[in-house]
Length: 81
Image 1: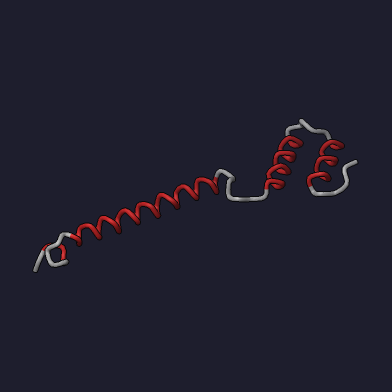
Image 2 (image 1 turned 135 degrees about the vertical axis):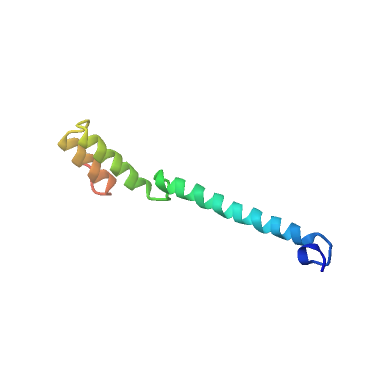
């Protein structure tokens, strides 16, 4: 029996290294994807992000009731007053 099970050509080791490299690449891609999703870069709608920012500013008191409603209506596609 020859080493690595390929008739002694050494390609068996090469195949295992290739499989290992592909596995590492898949795991790395999954980690990067999960980091983007956690950071809020999950491909969501930009309008939802703007509405979230507006809600946070309203909660902190940076925007009054009238300004909040006006901007929310504009973001929702309604008429701005």
